[in-house]
Image 1 (cartoon, rainbow, N blue to C red):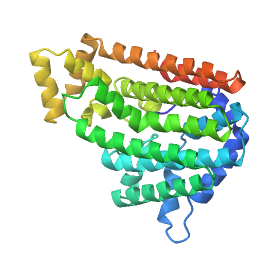
Image 2: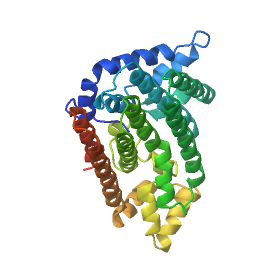
Image 3: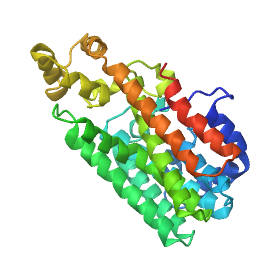
Length: 333
């Protein structure tokens, strides 16, 4: 999900506040994505890394560390680690989803091929673990290693849940907690850990990241059924065409009568999609109020993220993180 580029937005204020550290993170990313023997690696990674992403996850690591007095080389390395993990998952996701657009540009698998995307993603995962070891903390490594496993688990769960009208809201939450929220939570948690924060402060920032990630993904899923392509960084309706069971669809299926259930069975489970089906799906979601319900749920998770910040000391960055949680859902209005 892309974020508005207006300089008054919370993520831009966060970027300005962390500009020096982010410059160091970006330099480290460019250095570590280089390869002496395989030029395809920097070509593919540069295409995605330089595509204008907001670097939100590494900024969360840096903000958590600096807010608690722990900015420095280890925080920079962990921020780069988080971004490498994220970029690796994007490369793999675009192959799995057969995507053709990412951050408003053609995907790497489209410009090169699936093999290159998968193998370069593997390379970035390996680089991320190299960076982890340089922080000399088994506890930090455990958090990021666990997050990497949870991300992969969430993606596999999504495969088994996809096109299955029996997918529940609980399964959906487990999927997005894995594929999105796990890295948000870990990014915040390790930033607090390298700052030497108390266990309660570490837990508060982990809860913030988890709730922010869930709100972020729910907003993304809702925007797919009504956001401008420039805002969401992909084509509107992609989730429908890919037959993904996201929150608004799950709610619509649960409320469906016999005829509506037959429609969802045809377009989602059987994949028999015809002209006008996306419009009908939108009509059904509006009829049953599932788009509004998704908005309400995303807002509730954003409020939970903001509440979690009560567990950390007052700091200008804390205000920016709170504003960020509000902003990821404010665009849904």
